[in-house]
Length: 198
Image 1 (spheres, helix red, strand yellow):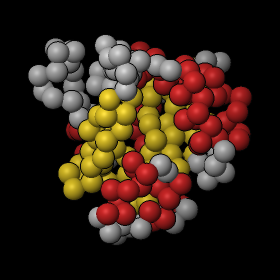
Image 2 (cartoon, rainbow, N blue to C red):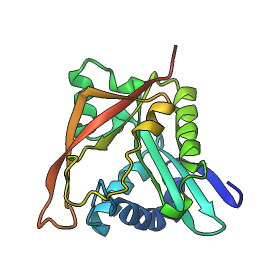
Image 3 (cartoon, one colour):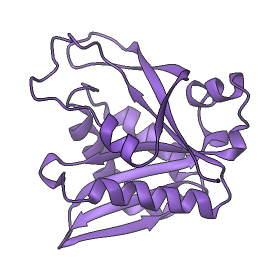
Image 4 (cartoon, one colour):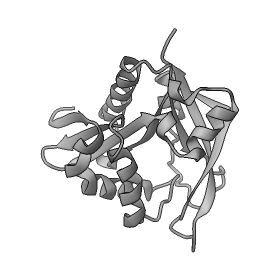
């Protein structure tokens, strides 16, 4: 990770980096499996939820000046219904779960340990704050999706190696507009979960 600097901040301290983070999210999430047709207005609203929360966490990766990667998180209790609801229905107490919003990294910086560092930073923060679980969700596209690249490799192995387990009993849907869609449609999302206490 030579020349890459990792920085963490919380709440409003992200303000100087919000525009760069919005551009980064739009760039990375254009790729499969998200295929997100980036919307700056949506990005501003989405990121403002995290920026207004003093309990949120941002882990930022810089290559000198430019922001090249970022990971976010906040207590599940502060999340929207789509993410909080499945846990409540399954009997989890949202206040015991730290939710990872996303992890985005420009392609040319992958394979250098930055993704692992993102996971470790958020997990260390969550454990230090007394959360019992860390969780995130990921979109699931059909294997025969027409825009799936031939060389696509899901991150399941990486997540499993970090101790996170796909939990099919925790599912949700979340809506966004794919690049080839005229309007938003709901996408299936499955949660991955890790216990932070023995």
